[in-house]
Image (cartoon, rainbow, N blue to C red):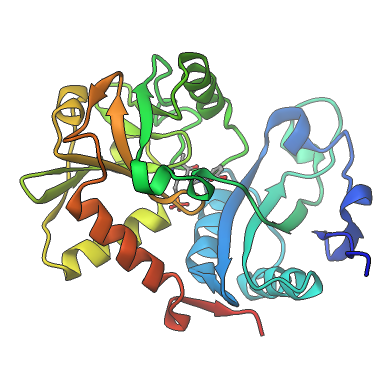
Length: 297
Ligand code: PXG
């Protein structure tokens, strides 16, 4: 039987992937003017869907983009797209752009936002042995955009900052990049929040460094506290990262990933540490808990 082509949601209608297109006058393309979310479904449950929708609407509010439909309709649109594609496990990309305007950047010319929902699968670190071995990373010269500029606190379509960081990692032959905030403290990965463990205490940078308030990071903080660990949000220097017992990234796509090397410095004993391993294990249980998400049915 021939596999049905993936169906993409655009503004309330479904299109086969090969025909899913938007205007070249869309300001999402012309100016990166828009917001997005990356979401995952596990075993028929869309993990933390309501939290992702809340964050999407907050990002839109911050850039004065009126999405034009209520949150509950957006949730339904995501579920409908998953159903249409008969998906139980999926990576979901939800994009809302300013919409079609003219070639000038004035957003007032954009009368209606464009809403795109892609439900697909993605290949990630987690598909190889990264989770068992840990990954290599580097602190890049690409500092996180300032908090009074295109800060990653807003999940906007401006990701050139992260892309430049990723290019540096690629060029250096390491798997991931870590950006510092404007004041030189550690901020986050290209699409992941970062944590370190020292003497069984877990530390993570505050969002005042310009990091995105990650939903995975929030879940990991909750899980860790429940396990009895102290989780402290405070500024972290590059040296503290190099000398940590354990370092790990968190993100919707990445889940929890141990870091075994940063700028050629071995982290801990160069293997995923015990705290990271416990959190990875527990996270896999939580993402499949029906209470933690919205069912696709
Ligand atoms: N920081 C940034 C800058 C991000 O873009 C995270 C942290 C982690 O947040 P969540 O809420 O997912 O725990 C992100 C995640 C991907 C991908 O394919 C993910 C993101 C952006 C682009 C791609 O993994 N956002």
